Image (cartoon, rainbow, N blue to C red; front, side, top):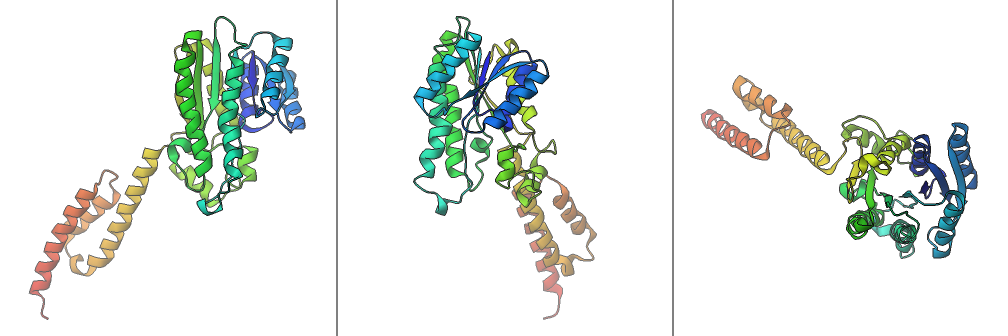
Length: 316
């Protein structure tokens, strides 16, 4: 039996449907979007699965206790908890407010703690699986997301700490950190699904060349919930199609080197126009991703010496 918070749409809905398709009974939690939650349950039951709708504001301890009591009445022992509920707002530092900080931290950080604290009471003697939904933001550190990134970094820490703390109870705690994913929230924020420059940039830096779908995250959650992942706990799984900080840094450095080389081409073109050796060497550096800044510096030193020799032979 699995309880999924914030499951009325987006990643939560994708996980709920995936777990149900794998044979789990699912409690679809929502805070305000009852229609969305009922739609998810309808899709599950139409496919032969088992699911119920459970309303509750998971930022409130009383509602949290009521959710688990409802799960026990309907299904008995809990096997899987997915902490998916989250909020975010894209703002540069100058627009950060005192009100936004507790809003995001309460939902994104306090809620998983409250849910896990209560869930421990309902797991059976064989333990269970807790799956936190973090974000690739905790590793990519994108601009205009200082509060959100801080909350998801906290989720990473919670995952690793509680994996150690709850291991003796055979309760596994792992996190899935999605990258760019096509959800209703991402579309509403103008980030994904609108064909903007930010989305195009993400696509260009994603090795698998597409935006993720909620079902992609759902399949990973199914694995973590299963016995196949019984030896995994405290893991942070970056589900981003290969998009990661190192790749972004390498691409940025490569593009910078290409820009420098392009400027160099314009600067020395007249001097080296007839010198095929240096022309070919410049082209090699311009196209080779393995080029280092030391290579560039060495090349410019050679070119500088060559230019000085050329200039020395020219009349003033």
